[in-house]
Each structure stands twice: as C-alpha cells, then as structure tokens.
Image (cartoon, rainbow, N blue to C red; front, side, top):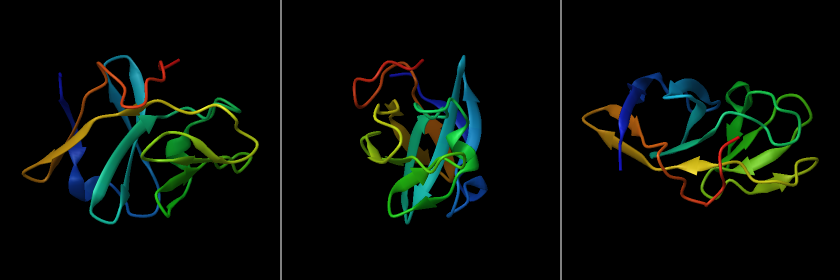
Amino acid sequence: MTFERVCALSEVPGDEGLAVRVGDLDVAVARDGDDVYAVQDLCTHAAVPLSEGEVADCQIECWLHGSRFDLRSGKPTGPPATEPVATFPVEVRDGDVFVDVSQTLNGVTPS
C-alpha cells in the first residue's frame, strides 16, 4: 500500500466532502463522526464532483440530481445512480489524513 498525505483531519468538514488530488485521481474525503472515508470524486450518474455534496448518515449526496452513495461500500443508496463509486483505504495519523489510491476497497476501478 502507498498512502499519501492529503490533508489535515481538521480540514475535513463534518457535513460535506473535501476535494483532494491523489496522483491522477480526484478523491472526496468525508467524515462520519470519528470515521474518515475516501471515494472517487465523481458521481457515476452525472460525472460531477461528489465533494460538493452533503454528507450525512455515512452517505455522500451528489448535489446535481441527489444520487447518494454509501461512504463505506461506494454503493448507490439513492437514485438516479445505479453504479458504485470506487472507495479507497484511509488512515489518520497524528491529525493528518492519508489515502491509498493504488487499490480500491470495493473492487471498483476508478474512471
């Protein structure tokens, strides 16, 4: 695994995603309580940034059409999206967030 520092934990809001770039990928980092998640920052329905949407109940919502995705699995939990987003391993170390985009947690290939 190749973890890269993407931001300070304090930079990740509790109610929306944070857009970061990891290598060649746009990633949305999101918090749900004390847990931190990373998903590809691209809605599978409309190809817009998920980081601009709201985060609640371990889901991130696309601001354009309201598709929702589970932050743990990447699976869509609300239409119109039907395809999952890629999810990535996250570590929090000494107040910093690290993401590994060399592999996905859910087997979805980033687009």
